[in-house]
Image (cartoon, rainbow, N blue to C red):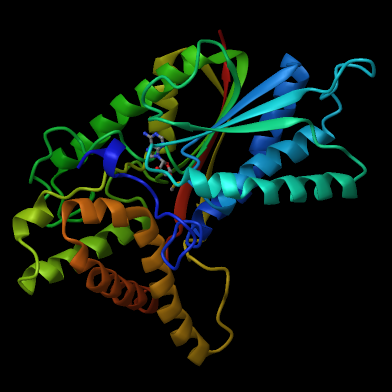
Length: 378
Ligand SMILES: C[S@@+](CC[C@H](N)C(=O)[O-])C[C@H]1O[C@@H](n2cnc3c(N)ncnc32)[C@H](O)[C@@H]1O
């Protein structure tokens, strides 16, 4: 598996597309809105740029990408410092939307017209005018340099830096029967995941520190853990356990080779707040201004059941919906490692197993999300 070639969210706006199956990620953008708004206001107030350069790293495609852009524009609209003074022209904004080369940038570009209309309307309702802005797509890995030195005022990344640059080095077939850190994973394997994250996140910060202007801001949101125990990332751990369980079923039915399952590992890591703080401290060039842990509702839709019968149907719908959500993020990796013909059965198994989990658990853990606002000290 080569991440830069094989990883992308499902394209377009079909049944299993990321655009249609990213409600959980959307909740993260909505929950962290006040932190983003504060960072935008601080850049306007403290740096007063004539051209504000903003980058969204791991933007994917669909409503969440546009939600970020419109949120920033609305905040700038309301910011009293977005014009230098009455004689001077208003601040201009340049957005760079970054993702890996396989991302559906066409889908993003096609949605820009809709963004323009809604932004103009929203600002007009409040008697305001959006700043002149320009949007460009920027393909490439955020584990490499993306921008010239000291050129970006605000970096944003939501639910993306959780993806590692590669499957942890030396993992091979050591994580038998699991696709992630699961109940039967050896502690040494969990350590390999931790080491890879430390290396990747440090590199990510190092690259951004070269690119950010002095006093610039970074708002990073990651799927994380509440506890230090690396084996317990709440519902995220459960979701990967259930995916492993589905693959083990296909192995037991003779539809997949065991070696194929043993050598498949999802390159995602969920850090704790402490781990993130330590890595930022080690970097030494950034100052944490805010850090929060949220427990988000882990259900893939917003509907809640009203009766016992409805609860059964809702559990089934939740299974299908979570299956589509997981498929929208992992199908390209699964197809590149296994064969496409297992997809339907694998995700049907996952949906059933997830429904049983919803029905059997009284107390269900949510998805833990950590958001940090950082300021460049240099
Ligand atoms: C779960 S999606 C989140 C998308 C969007 N920010 C949102 O909130 O809905 C994660 C995105 O990060 C991208 N990504 C993962 N690793 C990356 C890397 N090394 N460089 C750039 N983008 C990456 C993936 O391709 C994917 O589009």
